[in-house]
Picture 1 (tube, rainbow, N blue to C red):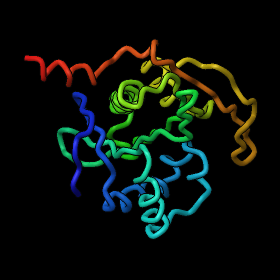
Picture 2 (picture 1 turned 45 degrees about the vertical axis):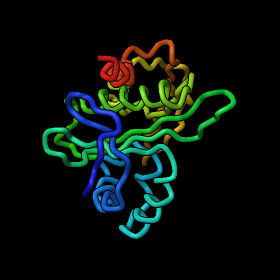
Picture 3 (picture 1 turned 60 degrees about the vertical axis):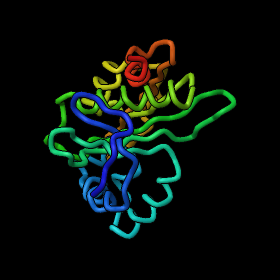
Length: 190
């Protein structure tokens, strides 16, 4: 699978998606442990053909495969969606599909890289996301990356006989600390 570093960190890089990514995405989306924190993916079957069609559609937007720098293998994906160019805002989503990479900082680094892309290349001002109250790993990751909780939809997610809050979080361009884009610009000035 060809992957090309669009934005790179120490552990991972964001690459434009490749059609070959559909197979591994189907594996992640059909693994309940991976899919439950995502939302619709948990109760929607994702055969390979559906994933291929979805990937083709999404390649027209701001979606990236997250690739482990050491192994050069895809470990997740992240995206910006619902872009509003007038108000300079968007929604964000991420999944680290490879469980061996959970709780090791890959998600936080990928989020920071995606925020660099959003704030410094797309010139957005506000990025928002929604997650579920049971997604403790995700909540910690987003807080470390600078997101703040802005509200909750109480009992907005029902799984079996249990209810969970939907946690809404956001970050503004002025609150974002990493500026990976400037490192690229500074290289050209030497």
